[in-house]
Image (cartoon, rainbow, N blue to C red; front, side, top):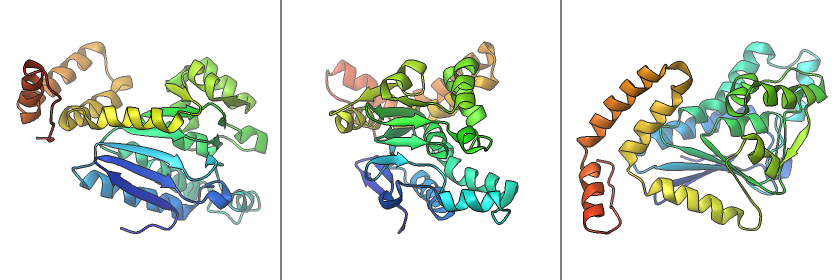
Length: 260
């Protein structure tokens, strides 16, 4: 499948999805969103895909919404609320990936670009990157599920701080607040690749099953979680990967998981 505003490459199970509009700081367009939606479907259909790394080409992760589109909204010529909802859903289709995803925030992630990164399972941020929910600074209400995803990551108080103020944070503060799990500087690419490699080398059936379990965490009681885990664990015990993992420990070697 060919794309014009993104690139998708599969390197030994590590899929790299790159926003490819560096001349416009990877500003988000409807066409880009449609390509991401199509890419998600294609990646899910490829059983060799084990982890997805999402990043921006050039110096920015994403500058957020396209300025022209935002201006069209203010004069009534834009798609309106219904169109906005559709636009956001295209980008948040990364939440539908069946394997773990890592937002490698290699540069600035502003507004909707920041929100897009929150759709990934994990975030690694460059020490020099700037992140901000700057919607209110533009006179508009936050979108792209910002009021849903951010509180679940950092708690309601910190989310309110970032959303109400629209202030910009750096990489180290992003980790401190819980927005990202890791911050890296000169070794950014190495840190991203190491984490992606660790996930890709784990048992694919178990990892995909775990993603489903984690996705419902906020909707379950602890008793429901125990039941969900027991069912998923019982299923993975029947796989060839489980036999391989146990054999590898016994034989003191690296397991060769096949996703079976």
